[in-house]
Image (cartoon, rainbow, N blue to C red; front, side, top):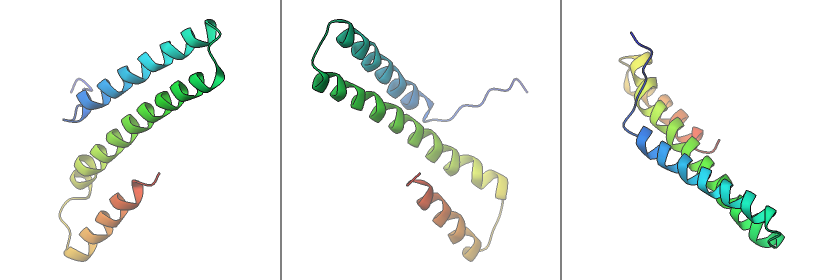
Length: 92
């Protein structure tokens, strides 16, 4: 095994992180240029949102694909507990 771990959502996560990287570059340029704090804060918010969205996508994908593989077959009640865990994890 080469240690490679990929999911279908990884390209989406990469795109979101690249977007965050672009926003962060812009924030640095804005501060260096002496742009107003409101403009800088708006761009920082965009960075935070892009990173948070990437994290959420990655975690949800992991739960959807890896958790089911680890726990294996379960009865309906146990399966509901896993579904509840996945649902509540979206609030992290």
